[in-house]
Image (cartoon, rainbow, N blue to C red; front, side, top):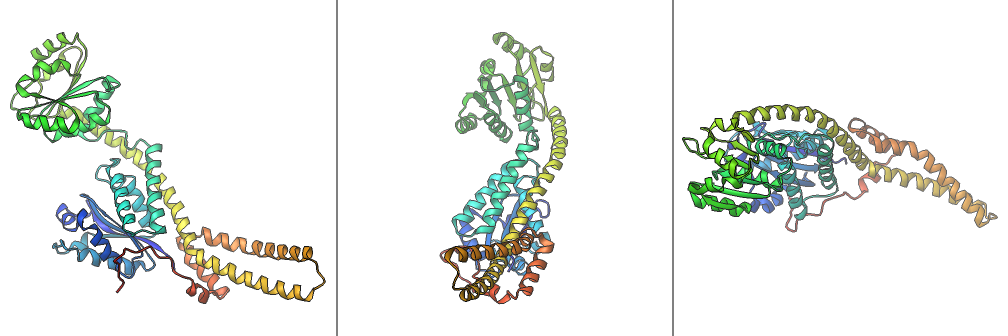
Length: 441
């Protein structure tokens, strides 16, 4: 029977966080979850994707309707599921639609922030866990590797991820544009909260040379510095170290300015007027806006960054349209492959039937022509084999290239015309290597 991809799940597009939390599967529960899922009679292969933004089951099945119902039942029986009515938030994708969904997820076209790369890493981790537990086979192995290839192509052929769309990433993006390179630059983080932590991650990923962290609670500055390989300084002493900083990021909860023009004038004098870039991520602001009037000083606040983000989001949406076309091409290629895979048992049976006819007729002919030598017998063998191959070439090519709509039609026609149904039924099914404790009930 034909194998089909199905996707059953919910995401930030369809369900509130409370519902997603109820269905989320913790790492410690993954093995048991696969045991329960693969015990379902219609599920041949499966991969579970559980993140903060989505909980999905991708499965290969010969019975898509029954398989989808069994996945819903699996989700309903999750040990931590207490929410009522979660089914109304679910979506079900089948066939080409399911393939497209997986490819779009991998390419971050379905993400909360289009173009953000985190989901690809999460998808690879989910695939690795499933493969390690014996939950994947030929179909999902190829599906996920092709989704990774599609994501790589999207990033290589579009600029979907090249524009910063978070405040912290936009700030670092601007710093890189001002200084061209950050490898020989030092950044100071004034404040050690979540915004500073995100900024530190972006600075490190962009190759910042050195990092200095300061915070009113010195222990927090020490923690942040330890995590990112920086240097902590006491908050009341940070002005002394300001001269070392090329990039200064402020994200404190101070009610008044922590950096003023007089302070910056003194620092620039000590730096021999080397440029400085100030990024104010706080509301109320940490840096006196008059600092921006000083030569060789660049100051951006949250409103400035929001303007940059808005432009970048618009650019990402334009690039996303290009990405959708690339994904469509990749989906089409995968669907042709799985269509040919569905046709393989029929092709094998057809070849077996025609070859049996050829062999029978050739043997009878050769038996009546005992005077023929080995050379003539070999010539007849080659000729009849060539005739069979030429006759089968067109129908086999058609079976391999048939799309979702034509697939079942052509396979059924060949089975009926050549009376291959019984041979088809005898063909051994292709099954994934099961979990050691797997039971079918």
